[in-house]
Length: 274
Image 1: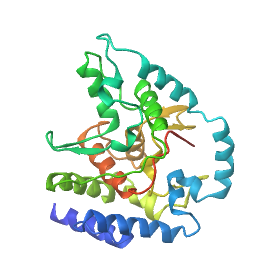
Image 2 (image 1 turned 90 degrees about the vertical axis):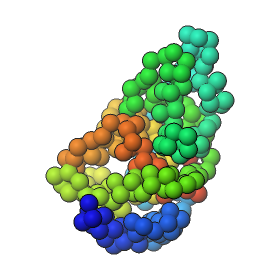
Image 3 (image 1 turned 180 degrees about the vertical axis):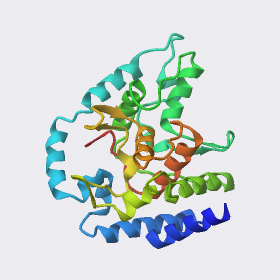
Image 4 (image 1 turned 120 degrees about the vertical axis):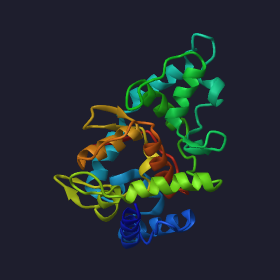
């Protein structure tokens, strides 16, 4: 384990100036500095647009797509789900108050000692009202999340780390992000940090800064909507690594860390990507 931690530290410091035991504030400042220096022509607030913030050719195509975005049907379906009462007469409004609460997630729940994400909260709302949980990667949960994300556009990302237990979860997410894995021996940062802007076949790799701002997304590759944890699983598969359960602690803590790295940007989901 000690050897692993030293490896992670070396990768983090070498790539971004982020050290395993630096404070979250220092981590985030180094993370932002890395990407703004790597892509000096990209306005800071534009990193929420992923690869379209750094690639002019792709951006032109994306702007055309956004005139009739493929996620519109998901927003409509999510709104219908939101307004459909559960069998007990209650609904999502009784759990969340309003749909535009994307900016509240992810957060550290002090009583439960774990990270709570929006999709987890959606299913817990359902189960608390006698409904069956939804599958976490696609389908109705992506629709509901898309509607809630759309209602939350423009809300600032402001993940907080309130205590040492939350900090430990953040550190586990951070270690996951920088740890190399799989047969290809890649970390998340290898592709979306050092490799950001490089071509993989015909596509450029997106920068990690702002990555969690626009989910759920419609991906042309999927032919439909997907949640952030669906994307996490796909990334693990692409480096030929073992995936983890969607909404398991590993991916929730990864989401906690990665969303904290984008503090100060705005949520702008749902999005459309290749």
